[in-house]
Amino acid sequence: MKRIVLFTFTMLLCIFCYAQSEHLKFSGIPIDGTINQFQAKIVQKGYVYNKLYSEAISNGVRCFDGTFVGNKVGLYVYYDEQIKKVYRVKAVINNISEELADQKYQMIQQLLQRKYEDCYFQEDKKENKPSLTIYASRDLCKTLSLEICLYHYFFVPL
Image (cartoon, rainbow, N blue to C red; front, side, top):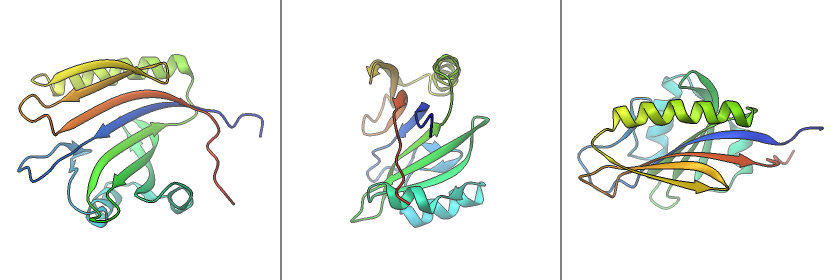
C-alpha cells in the first residue's frame, strides 16, 4: 500500500433548505426530501450505492460511485439522522494530481459562476486549498460550496 494518499478535488454542494419552494439541484435532482427519496433518484442517474464506504463513514452519510462533470467521483450525501432529510452533497474526484485538481477547480468555479451569476461568492481557504462558497442572494439559507481538499489516508475497515 505504497500510496494510500488520495489527492482529492472536492466539489462540495451544501444546502440548508428549510420549507423553500425552490431548491438547488445536484445533477438535476433537487437537494431536499428524505435520503431514501434522494437515493432512488441518484441511482436512476447511474450512481451506484457504495455499501462498504457508507458503513465505514459516520451515520448520516451515504456514499455512491458515479460520474460528475465528466469525472469518476465518490459521492457523499449528508442527511439529518433523525428526520432523514438531505442537506448536503459532496462529489470527490479521487487519485488526481494537485496540478490537475487546481485546473478542474478553476473550470468548475467558472461554470458555477456563470450558472449562479446572481449569487454572492465568497472565496476562502480550507486545509490550505482554495474554497468557493456560493450564497443564493435572495435566500442565504441556501448554500452551494465548491472546495478543494487534500485527504490523507482514507481507511475502510475490512
